[in-house]
Image (cartoon, rainbow, N blue to C red; front, side, top):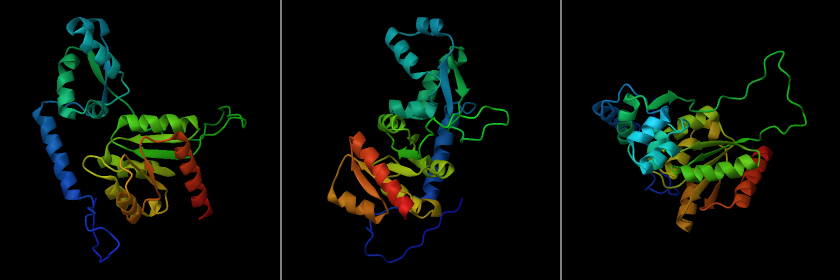
Amino acid sequence: MEVTCDLRQDNLLSTRLVLIDADQLINEAQKQWQAWQGAKVADRSPNSAPIIRQADELQQRTSPQVYQTLKQLLDGNQTLRDLSIRMKRDVVTVTSSLLPYVQMGLVELITIEDLSPPVSLPPSGTPTVSTSEVSPGPLVACVDDSPLMCQTLEKILVGANYQFLGINDPLRAISILLARKPAVIFLDLVMPNANGYEICGQLRKLSFFRHTPIIILTGNDGIVDRVRAKMVGSTDFMSKPVNPDLVLGAIRKHLKEESVA
């Protein structure tokens, strides 16, 4: 992957705007891999999901409080990366803490699909869906390091018959968005490693996302943030906590404008 930067004099853009540095991301990935090897978990994948296999024995070997926490977290649907974000701890630390239970066979690391498969046509001979059923609406993505924020938006959007894609890792956001190509993107302004300005600017450089509605989410609704968000190509600006009616109204508004354009 090659990243180029074309510097042009533009008085409208803030000189404080920083683009994503590919070398920096590569160095960070190398450091993470070295830490992963150093913790002696290189044979495990951070994208695997832990699930309890021997509940009774695990309960005997842990305190009631620890067991209840593990029972809630290790459901087989959350990867080690997801757990590290939820627990606000490094993924190496989370994996190392679970490793003794894995080695004893009390917990198993299983492989789960990272993204839902695309909708495909049913094979011949398969009964077709009744035309009276409502087909799912456009795909809406949310890039936010807070799992709670993604869960909130998911509840709002799925309830309104939209498809939803939540992304908690800003460093993987662009590649995932390219793979899924959502119709609308909600983008958190303040995240670790890469902020919303940077990601929005990078997306606008890609032809597919040149006109995609990008709505910036922030807990600090200031005029400076609004102006700067506009300068990097955002479509709209929304304050947290989000209001369901405002969320759905913004989606309908911008999808309608895009179809007219």
